[in-house]
Length: 613
Image (tube, rainbow, N blue to C red; front, top):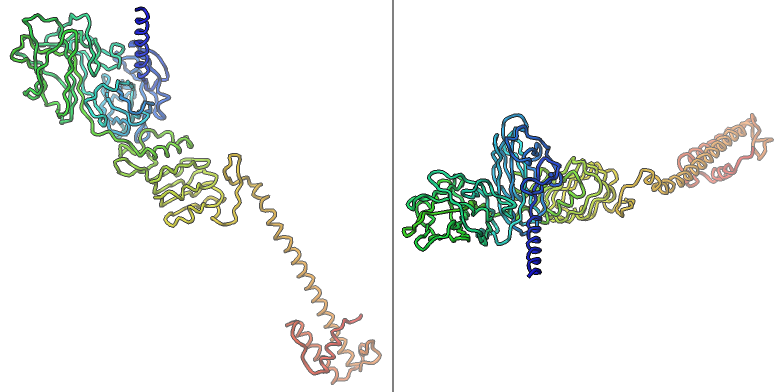
């Protein structure tokens, strides 16, 4: 017996530990961790959000410690908190807002609240008290993304607290998992104060409702109350209840539904407060707009009856009342109630592989981590640097990252296969251009200008006739197939290398051109000098021949007349003509065949022998 009790206590302890592990409480704008008066542990919000500024309220008005700070957002179209959660699990998410005149303007703002890419509600904050909104839904991803979006000029979104509570899977199962339930009212009738954790394991807040308008507060005398019903209300909610003084009087229920009709989900809880004798009966019906829609309800002593109203639409103008049946001796009674309206279908969010591709870019470039939440949804609040399609499951169609200060090599993000435009110009990207950019099936424009990219342009890009590439301003890039040598860095990727390495890599080419040019130059010089010397010698011979003709050619070496001797005029004419023709031929074309009379040719051949001085 003792071992059974020990085992039971252990199971209870494990169950409580499991429930507590599903309680995440974030004090927005704070960096502290502490435990409040309800034994709830709170943590600061630094690990859950990238942007915003912490502020301290100016007035407290008796609110709890957690409402003393807030985080306000003055940049970005939307700013999001990201909280890890188990995919496919059911959660209660509560967001609280206490203005407290933190900005000393006495102007509480209005803004939108979003959840996982879905519009949640428009928040109108108050100058006096705390405003909170609560939703129950089943997650489709592995995180809860709670976002605030500015919708009015000069009205900055802020938030004071976020609470995440894990719920059992069998709870609230009358609503399809594709929809969310938005709370409008949760009350414990007759309670003296609000009920929450630890009285409620799931930390639902059951507001205490004052008795009025002819209603009567009643107290149970049951020692134990079995609350084993699907939505697991806390025992504390059944310590009290309300009724009327006569069976002819109905209980009119306030729902706080919006003024327009919406699909609703209402749960009512009943427990008999006294053990009735054989002459007493309590039986009543739920009337909607004056008509009964359900079988009579008979509360049970020491136990709970749960009644759900679903699959109808209602508004704040719809009346809900509890009316005693004709055979009931006691008036109607109610202990607690929850009122929700049902959202539209929950979006699956942006295509998961696009989200993964964007996450790769964010992991590589820390500046992009400032953007959180769904990148495309809701559609008016896409990330500043993406464009998206309007499909039911949006696709990312463009990246606009010009001038974002990105540096280093581009990571692989080929999962973004719906991209049509990529603009990365005016950054400091380095390394080679990845091949996968040319294989993206829908890509039409790729702007890589004004970076530090190096190496050849991949053939996947240069051969892609559908793709317009802009790559100017990358001095170390070269065309595909050209002479383009890249240097591999320690990480194994190509890079441009240092300037000294570039110079040394060109030295063999420079030497290969310079040395032959040097030799060619000097060969030309030698040929020119020799030609000039030969021309000078021939001109000298012609002069000598002329002089010899004048002197008759006597007493000269080699048969030439001495200088100043007279020469036969006829001979002078013929010889001078031959020599002058020879000079002209040398100047015009050294390859021209010998011409003239046989005598002239012989004289020409004689004169071509070197002259001896």
